[in-house]
Structure formats: structure tokens, C-alpha cells
Length: 243
Length: 81
Ligand SMILES: [Fe+2]
Ligand SMILES: [Fe+2]
Image 1 (tube, rainbow over the protein chains, first blue to last red):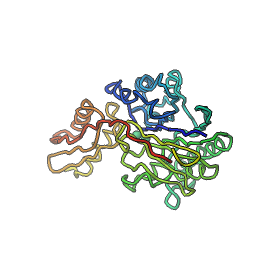
Image 2 (cartoon, rainbow over the protein chains, first blue to last red):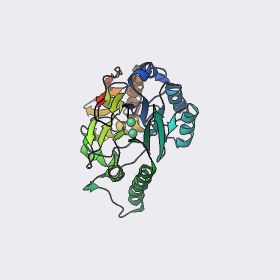
Image 3 (cartoon, chains in turn green, orange):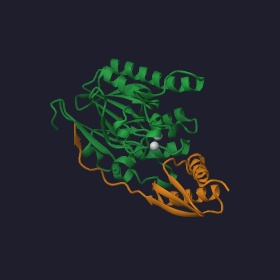
Image 4 (cartoon, each protein chain N blue to C red):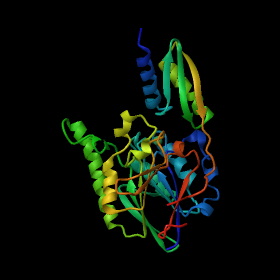
């Protein structure tokens, strides 16, 4: 199996005023990476105008682009339309499902979606009490179940989970503890650990840290642009452990 | 007089919810007659816009705009997993 170079970034939060500025950094990406993953919060408040900026910024790249949406991309209640704009530009958009790409004979499976919050084992919300709390927790549970199923059904040489919300608290270090339950949920990590994955990429936690790990030992990377400080990160995967 | 903490919270809320800004990561502090804004934004235009929305939400306070514009560095080397 040949090595696979995975570029990833999240939380680019594009709008009209920065049109074209991010794209400058994508020149030559094909020399650095084989695929680009976008970990959500691509817009500032989820308008179709901003969605169009995102579509134009990432269209016609020499590497395939797979995206999930973030909470900001939901703010104007137009997530489906934004996803359609991105798809028209040739960007694959995951919504709790999977895609398998053939990259020079290596099958890369990408599974995921927005994810959601709830907190981390021992310090999390549960389906108890008011309907509002139950709905909050249930949303995450259903997402985690769909990811588990998608992972189970995805046959690939390398499997990556792409999320907006965080599956672990390692990569939240730097964020105030009080808001951890709004930044992610351990249920997402549990789904990946149950079915196995080679890497989990997420965004959302702008003040967090890049590197972490699930309880099962899957590498987790927070690729929020403010965390990376650079246009995108590149993770090289090789079945033999050397790139 | 309204406690400064409530004023700061109101400004923070305005920055998050105002359609022009929708900016969640700004630190707001009120000290006396001054309102401090700190954090990173993506452009000079947004820096000014955020200060404007903060000013509207807390009229009468002098806005000290300490926001910085973050520039995006080129992608560095790859990490081997
Ligand atoms: Fe974000
Ligand atoms: Fe987010």
C-alpha cells in the first residue's frame, strides 16, 4: 500500500470580505497532499452568499475535497442548500455517511458529519429530565449511531472520521472547561473506537490544541484554522508506519 | 448602574448574534468607562466592524480595540502517523 497524505483544515469561516484570500494558499496542494478534508464552519453564519464564497474558494482543485458542515453553517437554517452549492462545485459533503475515494489504488474511506456536543465521559449530559435536554443528548446519540453504522459498512484501506465537533477533550485544552459540553461528545469517539478508524479530524474548538487520542488509541487532530495557524495540516498515513 | 460584567456579557452576546459579526471568540472586558476587545479576527474590515457593533451594544463606553488580524501561514511539513 502506498502512502496517503491527508490535508485538513476547519473553521475557515469565509465571507465576501476575504473572498480569494484563502485560495491563494491552496496553490500547489497537489504536491503536498492527495486529498483535502474540510472540518466544518466553512461560513460565518451560514448564508447562501457565504456558501457560494466557500464553493468558489475550493472548486476545481487538483485533489479531491471532502467536507462536513459546522454549527455556523447551520445558523441561517440553510444547511441543505449550502451542501448543494458545495456539491455543484465538485466538493463531496458528508452528512453522517461515508465516501470511498480511490487514490492511486489505495481506498480512502471518509466517514462523518457535523457531530454534536454533550460532553465527555463522567462529565456529560444524559437523556434525563426536560425534553430540551433529552433532545440535545439524543441528537448526538443518533449521529454517533449513524457513524458507527457507516464505519461498519465502509470497506477501505484507510479510514478517517471527519467531524466538526470534537470526539475527545484532549484537543480542547486551551478552551474554558465550562464550555466543554458544547464543544464535543465522547459518544463520537466511542463510535470510532467500536468500529476502528485510522484518524479522526475535527474543528470547532478555536482555542484548543491540535493533537489528541481516543480511549481506544485512534489519533485525533483538531484542525481549526486558528489552532493550526497555517492554511492546512498534512497527515501522512502508511500501513507500514513510515512515510 | 449596571454591573460591568453584565455589560460585557451583553456585548459578547451581541457580537455572537448580530448578523454583521457572528463572532464567538472575542474577549470583552469592561473597566470603568472603557470597553476592551481582544482576540483574533480574519480581516481589517472585520476588526472595525466588530468594534462598531460593540460600540452600539454599549453606548457611552470608549471602545479599546485590541483585536489582532491573524494571517494564515503557509502549510508546513507533514506529520507522519
Ligand atoms: Fe468555528
Ligand atoms: Fe463550530
